[in-house]
Length: 307
Image (cartoon, rainbow, N blue to C red):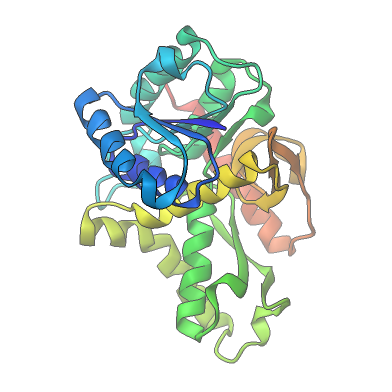
């Protein structure tokens, strides 16, 4: 699978590239960035380690060379400020994102190509990509709450001294202020997480609040997220490349799941070679379903304010 990372010279794009290289699953990685010299440097640095990691083609390129890509990973965007919500990025990032979409469309793309939006605000930009590119909606996905979910699980495991890979707990809705935790299905090792000593209602409130603030915390300490988001990008790409049919909280256009329509946000989604192949409406607690619907309304209101 040929994968082009747009914005591959930045922190998120370069971290995604090394995660994809280490896993060795995609066959080609093209680094594309507005700063062509930076893209060439990143590609060269990755190429130098190829003999230790995986047999892949790795190079810097442009939109014309990207036209035969199976997957476009869009990470380019203006950096979020420490006290700025992700939705505040809309007016600053929509113009840049529209230029990227126009460049992809003008250069041409394969009929079955997948466009994977990582740039923030991811739900809004995913919706714009669906509207602009004219692809079947399943072929446009956003990272959604994948990173929030990974943070949530990892923080729970760290606090309660559990194996991180055995903690299964979801964040759904918007990747931003109105996201919500799904405690109704949270488990560890297949057993209810609520049964673990220390995981009471007070702890659940505290750990969710910390999860919501995690992005700002990382920004204030090191300037921006990178490794964890790279790992979640790779997890999503691998589900596509290997047609794994994993159920992931990616963002995609909703057409009726939980009563949601004409909005992109995260619900349980089967991800395979065709992208967002199926939305799965698993039973939620009434307050969780209400929270999901409130998150959709918040995003629809924001969409209506885009000029």
